[in-house]
Image 1 (cartoon, helix red, strand yellow):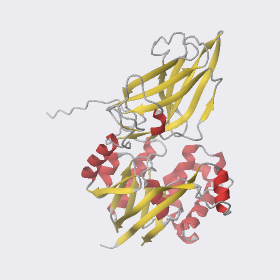
Image 2: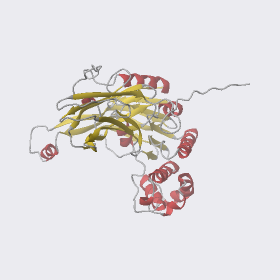
Image 3: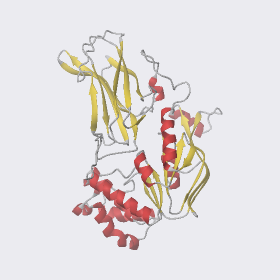
Image 4: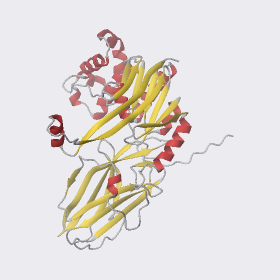
Length: 417
């Protein structure tokens, strides 16, 4: 069968610098010393997607999934290797990335369609389908800067999926909008599959991967570990999740903790940090049900958030907290030592407290953001000692999702009479 996508020995290397001045000195040739280290986002990756095939790509964060999709769609250039595409691509990656916020919805439909490579006549023929699918009413004649985030992604998705591509590239895009719009997206996805469109699909929703994909590719740290039937590769992926920390870091934590757990975590360099630092969060991590550091948690399994606080002054009844938010910033869940009725006492200057929050993961399979905090009341005034907003992401891996953001774990029975 002919290949719609052919990836041959593709490598993507990023140069990482300790500080901006090192990049500047190296670019000007001011130093003979190499001032960067090389990070292989992809390392000699090869695979093919045949015409009419639906192929899924799975892997942990940092495995190279989004990188290879961006190379296939031309957003990034590979360092070496060959990429051959046979067919017109529509990509559901960063929805609305090509929209002009000052233009109306209609104007952006034509702008986006033209950027994808379609003529005005082709877009004219598809306009009714796009507007019907987006279902945002008269807002199509208003500037998109007036849209809610939901209307924005609905229109962007409608353009991308109704332009009639030969190859559809999907990166976690089927979870946009409300549940009714998501159902519409999945019906369109199934329609594409039935009529023989080529689909390359990246998702943390293992249920969708299992349901829609003919074949699945497993990436880990830029390298292809395996490819094959969905169930076989998903089972292998779950084993990778349990043992994904490098040797030397993949160790159980003692009761008193280990130094610098956060070194094994994907810490957000742009996390918002503030507070008077009378108490300071000096370390944290997420533990899976085998007590190993990870930021990937399998839905339905127990996980633990562990926080270490150092006190730089005497504080009465500090409150230690965590919050989990979605990528739009909506707080979904969280708790703190006060709500849990834990007496934290009066730590003295120099004391260190370690607090653990253990719970089952009942959120749906997708990406979330973790925030941590230490607050309290000082002379009757609420005081923030230290907060770390969006300090890292949590990836929930799921092979069965229900409606909404969390799963009630319903027990369903059927009786035939």
